[in-house]
Every structure is written in structure tokens, then in C-alpha cells.
Image (cartoon, rainbow, N blue to C red; front, side, top):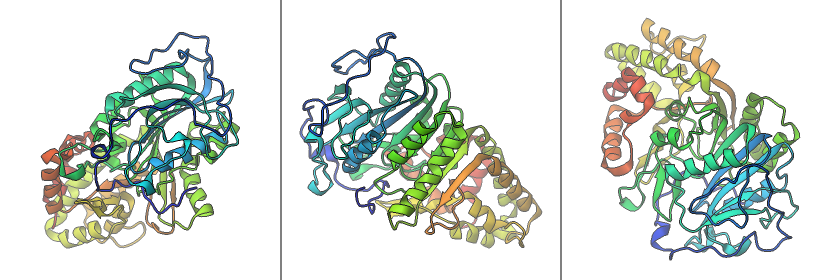
Length: 460
């Protein structure tokens, strides 16, 4: 593994596109390390790939038990971690039961310390069918297609990939991993320019996918069995609620994971070794093994990861709406205690580049600060205590697995945005000034207007 001190939280800095010439593809395969595996040949219809050059047309394969699709956007300062993750997948490779397929964009990063020069230092975007090999340095999986003009920060690009992927590699169950930086529900702009950013940052084009665009981007006319974010800060109520109808289970981190991301060899060994396991079991394994892998291999303590039952996520909004109503009604008497609960709840990320990610709070810890289970409520108001219990009841069904390192002892599996009213106003102005969608544009916000009102008018 690469050193793990580098995080997947979006970092301010010089836009790569300003320092790169127009990029071009260079050759096929990984460049060395053994002969590329043959391209899998299906017997089904040819699956078209407009805008892509394919050495051999992709025909739909016979359906398998699982297809594991990875939208691997390394067109940024995470570029050097992408080849390592791909090589981890190759240590296991696709099997008779499991397809492993990547869309992988790579750049020549301007900082040589952050640039991966392995695998021929190619640039552009490629689609690979991951096969097994013993070379841990070079990518030898068969190249399915390539392009020099793909923007992986566009929702439409993600949509094209997932529709192509599930058509060409049909399976009983499908898992999508979005690999990149993340900013929770938030957005940010690079270099002071008004560029919308939310997840999947493409520094060549200066674009990214906003939270409210994700549902359309991953729509495949069926539910994903698992949507997993190998990205920072994405396990938030606001994000989960946005995609609750697109997935059965949602996996991600409240915190910003290390740049290494998932230990894909361990995940693929588990899936290929037990393809008949329940979807719930594999979603839970991703969450638990992420902590276990970092505990075993690094000294990093702030790992968080959890799995959600998306069918239960929809109930979070009305429960939070009721809590917002109760907190607003109680704040005249209990304002200082409510503000203290907000400030002291477990938080994530940092204040970086003018974006205060520490307003992301663990939702259960916030409830504990208001009215702890079995203890004297800090906000001893019957309406608040009742509403807190209502949220707890919903979360008990929604959070099916939670893993936390010692650096986040009060992380319980789901974060939520809880700023002060002053911070809320400043963020709204910032978001409306070209950074992306305001909080009110989120489906969660619209379904819980009393909660949004509390954020705007609560105690300072």
C-alpha cells in the first residue's frame, strides 16, 4: 500500500487543467509485467460505446451472480493511488460468478511527487475487465475501450458508464463504487472559480457531480444492490436520502478516508469466495473490513465506515422534521443546551479552503447530547425527548453496520449537517455564489422543512 496519510478530502490547490497540455492516449494494456489477458467474449448483442475506441466490440456476457463496477476517477491528486487499487483487484480478478469492471481516468499530475509513472504513464480514460495476475505493479487486465475526451466529473458520463456496464456485464446483483474525492452534500470551487463540485472531481475539466445529480447519474431502471462511496464524507443523511430509491444498501464514510481507499483485494476475495452471500452481508463486510484492514496494516485511527439499509432511509426525513419542530419550540428555554449539543457532537473533516466540513456531525451523537439513553436529558423538554427517540427508532433500522476507529469513538454510522444559523447563512451564500446547490435544493431538506428552519433560526 502507499503511505496512508493522504486523505480523500478535497484539497484546495492549482487546477490540473491549467498545467496540462491536451492529453492523449498512449498504447494499450498496462505496459510490462506480463501479457494482457484476453478480452472476454460474450455471445449477446454488441453493446455500443459512442465516443470510445474499442479494439474488439463489447458483446454482452452471459449473466453472472455479481457485477462489481468501479467509477475510478483519478484525474486529480489521487492519481497515484488508482493503479494500486486496480492491482489489488487484479490479485483476485473476475471469476465465473463475478465480473469486475472499471472506468479509469488517469492524468499526468503536475506535482511529480503525486504522479504515478507506472504502467507507461498513459493519460485519458480506459475501460478494463479485471482479470487475475500476480504482478502487483503493472495493470495487465484486458483493455475494453479507451477515450481521450471523457469528462468524469459529468453526471452524464457516470450515467453512460453504468448503463453500458450493466448491459455488457449482466448479473443477478450489481454493486457500484464511486472512487474519488467527496465533500458530503457540500460543494466547493477550485481556485476561486465558480465550478460546481460535489463528488467525482475531474481536475482536467474542472467539473464534478453535484449531490442532486447523483440519482439521475446512477439510474439503471433497477435498484443497485449496493452503492458504495470510496470517497470522503459521503455517508450523510442528505446524500443517502438523495439516492434512497436507487439502491438497496448504501456504504460510505462519515470521515475522510486515507488516499489508499478500500483494500480491494480483501473485498474481492470475500465476494468471489462467497458469491451467494446476502447483499446485506457483503455491504456490512465492506464497512467492517475497511476498519479491520486499516487497523491491521496502518496506525490510522480515524477510520469510519458504515452500511445503510436504503429502504429505511426515507423515514429519516420525517423524523428529523419532527425534531426540528421540537427544537425550535424549545429553544427559548433550552437554547444554550441545544447550541452546546450542536457544538460538541462528533464532527468530521476540517476547515479547508474556506469550506468548514466540521459542520458535519454524527447524528446519533447529537441525539445523545440532547437526551442520552438512560441518562438525564440535557434538553429536558418532553417534545424534544420524544422527537429524539423517534429519530433513534428510525436509525436503529437504517444503520445495519458501523465500524469506527479509536480516533472517532462517538461515530455511529451517519452524519448530518448541523451548522449554527450564522454558518448556515454563510454557506447558503457561498453555495449560491457558484459553488453548487444550496441546502434547500436537496430532497432531504425539502422533505424536512422544519429541520431546515431550525438550522436557519436555531440558537447561535
